[in-house]
Every structure is written in structure tokens, then in C-alpha cells.
Length: 388
Image (cartoon, rainbow, N blue to C red):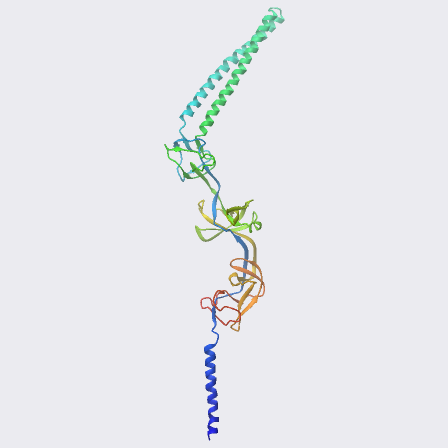
């Protein structure tokens, strides 16, 4: 009777044990890790390099003007922000003394010229008289000594004429020298542009920069009709860059915008601004100078040089790549699979896949999360599920 009862209770006991075991397994089972994934697709991949420090918008022509000599500012013909034309007067120092010297030199030159007219006129008359005396001598009306005297007098007067003409040349040189001196006290625009800054006011003393001593210029003139971007590139990237390459230019003043351009120039030397920071400056121009709108010289800018482009290729987010070209693939069995792939072009956003992945597969991008490794059970992060 007892044996029969035990036989009837055995299935219930085994079922209870099974439930307990299943409950223990369920309680201790590996919990799936939430992972962010990206779906492999086809698209464009570029290989590019960018500047190491912020670049700057520069003007094709910019000059910082100062007078050659110092003096009190008498005329400021422009103000900051004015557009000026080539040859336009910008500033003049007091130079009344030089103007007086110039007027004196002009008067002396005028006097000398009149003396030339007088002396050379007498020389011409003396030569005519010498010719007349020579004719009379041939006919026997005058002696040979009289003809020689007339000829000697004509030669002397001609020499006096030439000397007077030389004095006119000297007077003209003195007059020109006074005008050159006046040029030391005036500033004219060497090209069309905009006056960026003026140092000094009417009545103040303007001092030119002596050699080796930096002094603010009197007038900073910028040609804002022609602008380019100058930026430092790491020296290891310099051999990859050449004039004519395509670039993307971005400006801090115009966020989320890029402007196409071309490399204009690569500096022929390496700059060592800081220790262990050797760079090569490159210059880039905008394909359409009007596309950024009105730019200010000095704006911060970045240059991204496009080295190569691949269109319609299988690509993987670069953030999903691990060392050795490996990725974690979200397997259909609910586990993460470690896979080694062959890569091609790469940038900070995408890397070209030559072999090892197909469009439509999903790779893990949240590699920094704890427990994310090959063989781990996973579940899709709700924030990224279904996103490419």
C-alpha cells in the first residue's frame, strides 16, 4: 500500500524538482546586454585629413602702413571702415617746412631756366657772328686774327650755355628731392581696399617702426574682395597634400555649413610653433567666394582635404571598429559574434568594407558598455533599435 502511494507521488515530486531547477536556471541565466547597433548600408566613403589647430581667414592683400618719418598728423583723409581706391590720400603729416623748400627749389629752377635762355641765346648769336667773320675773312675783308677771336668767343659762350643747362638739371634734381621728402610724410592707398584700423588722431605725433622694434602701424589696409583660408596641417600629412586638391572649408561663425574649395598653396617649410608640434601651413580658396557671404578677416576656419572618394560601397561606422579590423555583429541567435573584416578607405565617420560584412547586417557601436563582448547575449537598445 505504501509502495503504491509512493509510485503515485513520484511524478509530482519530479515535476516539483523540475520547476525548482527551472526556476534556479531562470534566476541565474545570463542577462542580455542592451547594445546600440548600426545597420550596414551602402554609401560614400571619403579619406580626408584636417588641420591640427584652428585656421584663419586671410586677405590676399593686406598692408600695415606707416610713414617713413615721424611727425604730427595734420590730415586724416579717411576713417575706419572706409572703402578706398588705389592712389587715394589716407594720411599726411605736417610738412610745411618741406613744402617751403620745394617752393624755393621750384623758384631756383625757374630762375636757372631763364638764365639758360639768356646765355644760350648769346651763344647762338656769337656763333652766327663767328660764321660771318669767317665769310668776311674768305673775301679778304677782315684779318684772320679777328675771325679767330670771334670763333673763340662763340665757343666760350656755348660752353657757358651747356653749364647753365647742367645747372637746370641740378635744380630739377633738388626740386625732385624735396618732393620725395614730402612723400615721406604722406600715405596713399597702394590698392583698393577697406581701412581696418587707424592708430592716431589729427594733432597727435605719429612714429614709424624702427628696425627690430614692433610699433602699431598708422593704417591697416585690407583688400576684402579676395579672401582665403590658412591652416596648419600635421607634418606627417604634408606629403599627401598638393595644390589643386578638393577641400571642405568650415567656419566657426557659420556652424553646420561646409563650403567647397581648392588647395591654393602648400608652404615649402615646416613651422615649429611649439615643441613637438611641427606643422605645414596650407592655403585654400573658396570655389564660390560669394557662397559664405560677407566674411571678416581673422575668422576661425578649418580645412578638410579630400584625399580619395568611393561611392556606393559597403561601409561600417568607424566607431564600431576594434583593433585589428574586428567588429561585433548582432547575430540572429541573440548572441554577439566577433568578426574580422577587410577595410579600405576610412574617415572619422565611415570605413569602407572590402570583405566580411554585407549590407543589412547589424554591428555594435556601443563598445564601451560593460559586458559587450563576443558570445554575450544582447538586446537592442530601444533608442537605437531600427536605426541605420
